[in-house]
Image (cartoon, rainbow, N blue to C red; front, side):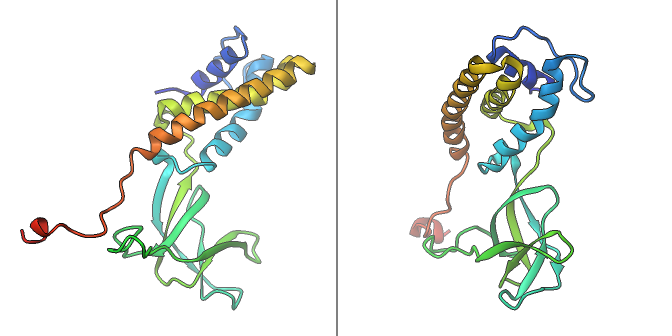
Length: 208
């Protein structure tokens, strides 16, 4: 389980920097800590939002709002700390898919800004729930491959301002390429944790 400071120090090691950061909140008096404090939230949130990681995927019954358009029947408040909505369905649905897996229970939806300035989920589904990616700030919840990935991503952000010039730009490109490589492995490992319900029940099981 890695702390945020552990991830920052891992990012520094990717850059060949021997700095040993002890705090970024508040940042200690060093360029490394200050740059990590500046870019960590950006790297973290973009890494989380980009893929439905198991540790960051949640479900919630949505709170209904008053619709401000006739284009959709219902409007709902966004779930707390939601980075990206993955699907909307009936709150009583027992699966993302129906008994026949070719007939998804997922409903059409869109995200729009209300007059208040807050985002809302618009859909024709009543009593809706959502599956979404949450902003997980507790780094001890991250999988090992996600830690590896986000450390490279953070290193790519910090490389330019810390190293500067052409060398910094090249290092940023190198770190981004490394991040993409680790991301492929991380996605594969994450996908292995999901199995779709079978479309039908075998006769010998149905007879029990």
